[in-house]
Length: 176
Image (cartoon, rainbow, N blue to C red):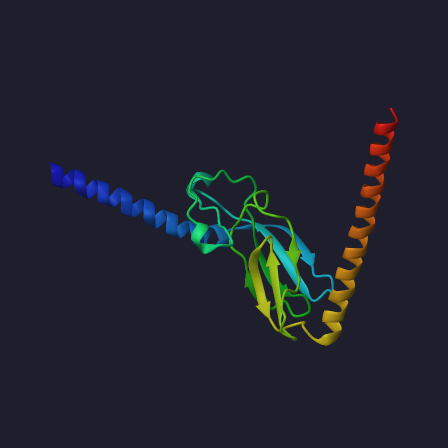
């Protein structure tokens, strides 16, 4: 009788482990497209997908950029997504991110983080998405530089407006 219980327990554990491993395949294979975004230079298209999950979210690991911290089981997911990168002109597949919860990570897309000329590294919410030399010619990288300079200028203007508003509210508060 004990042997039968042991066999059943081993089958349940093995079956659960198999389903967990297979979920990594079907969550991407049957995913639904949520949105598409073009890079600032129009060279790379990023498609965001919602994974197809059968197992409850409590059984999925919360990925973390640091591999030493990727053991957080039991995290409640609010909006799981993953992204795929394609060359916009040809539709060539360039890379894919891990499945992650964008609510729990910082919502920033870095379009080029390489110190090496002609190489482009794209990070999505801190997770590696693409490492390629496609679309990394001088003209394309110049377009990215203009885009980031515009972003910095808009940010600087907002920062200055916020500082002026803060100073005005402090002076109004001290006058009373």
